Image 1: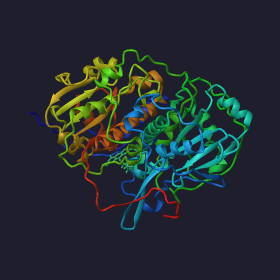
Image 2 (image 1 turned 90 degrees about the horizontal axis):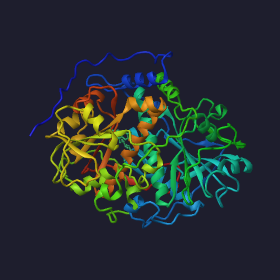
Image 3 (image 1 turned 45 degrees about the horizontal axis):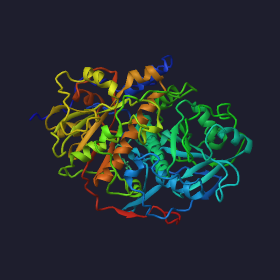
Image 4 (image 1 turned 60 degrees about the horizontal axis):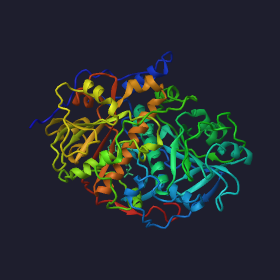
Length: 577
Ligand SMILES: Cc1cc2nc3c(=O)[nH]c(=O)nc-3n(C[C@H](O)[C@H](O)[C@H](O)COP(=O)(O)O)c2cc1C
């Protein structure tokens, strides 16, 4: 059996980049320059401050002072919906739109799920994970008049610490009617923004990537929360960032003053009634006017800012979407649910609520837990869109998968240790064979369901390699398996434009969120890994072309709990903590 190792110090890492991105470059060239300069190399990490300045640590909770705060009733725990049923589309009746259902939606998508304490330090965890637990992502909604929430349609900001909605603007009823007219009765809008500074404070230039990962995780938690209520959710992939900024008031400079600004990320439609084809118009918003009366001023998150990282603003600008044609792609050659899973999953361990609210990142893996091959195949099958209805959460995004998995399999019963590939778009098999190491075997496992595009590349013990390429983090070698998410990067940028750089990370974040919940369902845990050595990962799979880039890592396995920590309930509504 081969044991893979890479040298701990790779040669040829470029000198630390200095200065800014080339202002004369095209947006795509700027993206590539940003991506290259924010790679971690064995002997040089992407530029960051190095040590944390605790005095300027950003507040993870944005509030709009002066905006009405409507507390959402905390849903009674114990909803019986089984986890597996989240994945059976239209299997349950849709909840009507009400204060209670909106509360549950945000509880599952973006709320605080626990507080942790160690000695004098207390911090919160949320249903959406976040790189460094810094939570750059802010959530917004545009909702119709709802009894006990508001008598008029309004724009709201979600305040996770309070589990409340802050009413940022009251909409003119005509403007709202025009806005939602193309959509089914009971629809509403949700959106996300990022505060780059929250991640940049710790991670410097690489922070823009992490903000995008986090937005992708949150897009998945929104989709999954909608599924738990029997609702649909689709991303408006075509809408401009400036329209999103107008809709959520992010472009209102006076409401921010010197407070940290938010970068618009995405907007999605939630359908509480029967799903219909998503109309491609959003009257009013795209014209820049929603007839709103605004209130509230953003709080300042850090008393002062140390290092600023101008390349983050530059890559943000280069990847801003202007209104574009919607993506429509064909999924007819994707596998059916039967082909992917063998026998479709109709039973399981957990309720949806336990998986969603109990999700946690493992801080260490035990180095011994093995999982069954059935669980392994099921987890991977959940990462695939299906021909019939595209499967949840993949029905939220219109593009064919651009992110494939290079797997390091350590402990899966009946599955040889080694390197594997999950080719998430059947059309890309030949390209991946071409781009990866020539000697790879590309063998199917006899026990693998026929529609699951999983290939054994090379047998061997790759535990040290997995940990090494993940910035030396043992969690990548001590789990059941870990992986790099290898994106069809250059082709995506040339097909969809520079703005799609963000979408690639969103897709990677969605893959991660599915794995987080699948790990819970299997009785184990997982962890997102944003710290990895970019080019050494490519080297592990024999990728020399810059066309394909690893965008995120993940590990799944038996966790070691940190018993020094005390866990406190998410909400008792006592202030301050
Ligand atoms: C994009 C992303 C990157 C992450 N990178 C790492 C990592 O490199 N190492 C690690 O131990 N945890 C990593 N994590 C896990 C976070 O530290 C964790 O999500 C955060 O502390 C919140 O804890 P929770 O996931 O239990 O809610 C990452 C999470 C995300 C979403």
